[in-house]
Length: 96
Image 1: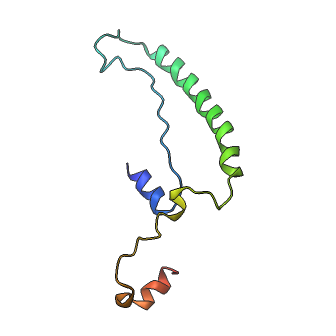
Image 2: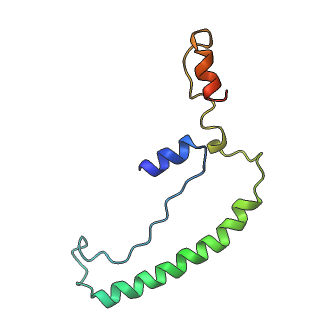
Image 3: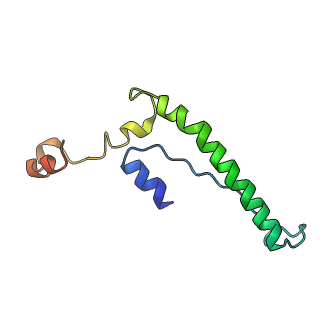
């Protein structure tokens, strides 16, 4: 999951939302589905995703910066080089 790693490095909270369209190709007890059935479920999933975003974004926007999520401090211990061995120019470039 490269997206999750990049989000972590940017100290951004990240969650995957997966919505199934069909599982006949790997589930032996299910019949084959048609393209129209898949499109129907895709359309429903699209509406579900929009509703999820509409209900979630206001909640996330309302959080203040002092929340206790670990994502906000993911890089706190990212530099493990001993303080006396750190390159001052590099620290300046990293804005630390």
